[in-house]
Amino acid sequence: MVATDNGTHPLSPSDCSVNPFLWEADGPELDEHPVIATDDSFALLNNEMLRSGEEPVSHSLFEIFDFNEEIINSDMMSGQFEDFSEPENLHVAADNSLHGEQIYNEIPPKLCDQIMNFQGGNGVGTSINNGLDCGVNLSGEEEERVQLVQLVLASGEMIGNEEYDDAALLVSKCKKLSSQLGSPTQRLVYYISDALQQRIQRNTLGISNNAAKPVSNLAFEIDSLFDVNEFSVLAAYYNSVLPYIKLLQFTSVQAIIDAVGNEKRIHVIDLAMRTGSQWTVLMEFLAHRAATSTTSRRQFLKITVVGRNGEELRKIGKRLEELAKSLDIPFSYKMVEIQNLEEIKEGLFTVKSSEALAVYAPIILRSLLYDPVLLVDVLCIFKKLKPRIMVAVEVEAKHNSSCFVNRLREVLYNYCAFFDMLDVIFPDRNDIKRVKYEELLEGNQIRNILVFEGKERTIRHVTSDVWRVFFTEAGFKEMSFSFHALYQARLLLKEYVSGQYYTLQPDGHAIIVRWKGTPLMAVSAWTVIK
Image 1 (cartoon, helix red, strand yellow):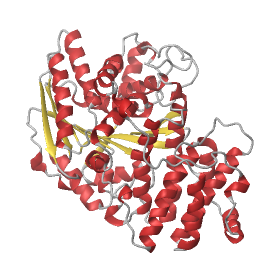
Image 2: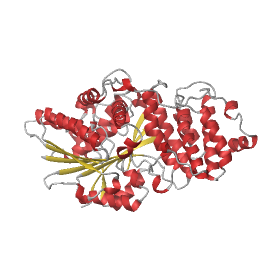
Image 3: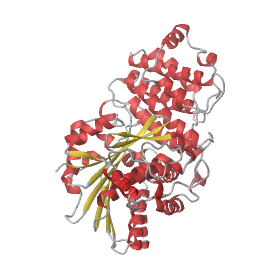
Image 4: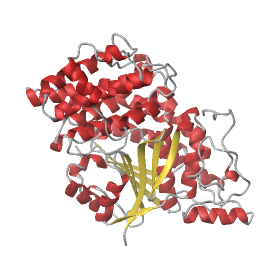
């Protein structure tokens, strides 16, 4: 595990009397027993127990963090990156340093005037200044990168006005100044300019590009974009080193434990199985509790996975079955093979009355946002299964606007944080693994958001307020996360040097994960209205 910023280990469980939302990752020393400033009933209960001298209720996953990391890394990653080669047609700018005169070179004066007068909306310039390359101290460099972003926004506005010839000229300039191995700004602009070129081609020549094919969701479509095995290795690697991914996984599993952890028979439906790492955490928790408690018995765990690639799902299932056997956990693994979520039907799932059901939906429901009625219908199917809890993880952004220019601004605003985060955590800009990861995930998402319309545009991120409307209409009510889930998230961030840049913000009962103030992801929990 990575040491904290000051080289010490995380706070001990005896320190969990602090409000998780108010405690910043690099915050001050904690008082002995401060009051918890939250409405969460679990937190208030722990606060009263602390005041009375009792120990807080312990259902924490944190003590098995090392065990899970060892399993995943040794099983999926050892030696796998040795075969990784440099991507074909790797784009590198002729000059990675940006200068104002270089940015506007070769652009007709009338277009330069338009660019200079252009005012980007939604705080994009502020986001770039505060988020991207904030560690660079070179005079004027941040301003020049904002000028590059303004160039992108100006070209996007021309595309929105169907001024394709002028837009093509600006986009070509953006492409020349961008680089897959450059600064966060240059890498972001590379994928955006690539998408803008494809949009211009589709709108003027009707040319389609396979690199921008519609992607309903990574769990179903990844085999058509990259080699499945290669993706599995990449996903396992980045799951193990990106703090926000672990945070979302641990918070989700903790919420499931809080809802069904005491039941004899636990059934989890995973709507987008990728590596299965979060379920190794759940297994280890169940085994640890059974081994250390005099009253707990072995609990039966059933996992039903939904996905498109049956071969990969079977490999994951085999690994989980082997782990369950080694931990002496009664275990069942079922697969539901479908092409996309549109095919979901109640009859595909077998849920026994003796099973306590939890549904896990990680970055998957967005694929149905093109049809709000269908989305609510799918949610209603899961409501009929009567889950104790349904956990949803989604990107916290506004990428569902029918206005192309608004979508472009929001892509710049949100994705600048993702590229900056990867730059801070992986400072080697020649890292081929990171190039592949950015192209596979961020690059393809950006292309889908900006190139396509209608049903083809399947990457449609919305904010927690919008998800709240859909879940409520389908008959769900929002659940609060337990104190342990929130406090554990803070402890996990303390494990990483980069954790100081993350903040957790409450939105209703949902948790928003932010990077340097810009929202990244949201996790929410729901239960059926009785």
